[in-house]
Image (cartoon, rainbow, N blue to C red; front, side, top):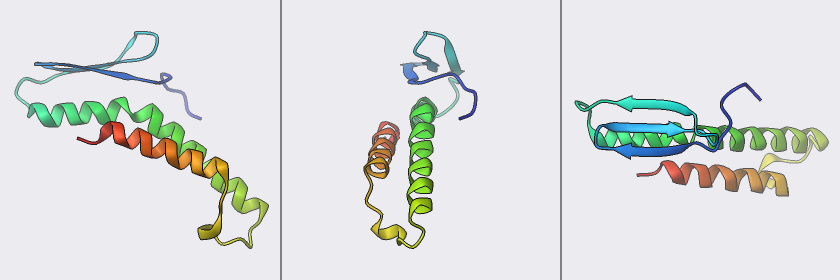
Length: 101
């Protein structure tokens, strides 16, 4: 995995914008834009705050798929049933749900 501030990240919203803090309390992002559409600004904040969870879910999914397909290259991808793949999929859905308006 790449170097980044570890998640989870938490979104804090104010009338002037948002901030995102890491688990250790350090600020990851601070956005203040009173001229911007507030709803769009908050949606962007949700997406940014979900980045570590999305990255982790995609990493798990890629890892699970690569190892499942390599272990049985003749197995069609559509029929791959593996707990690690299901967990990664569920993690991705959970992370995406945090971003939905």
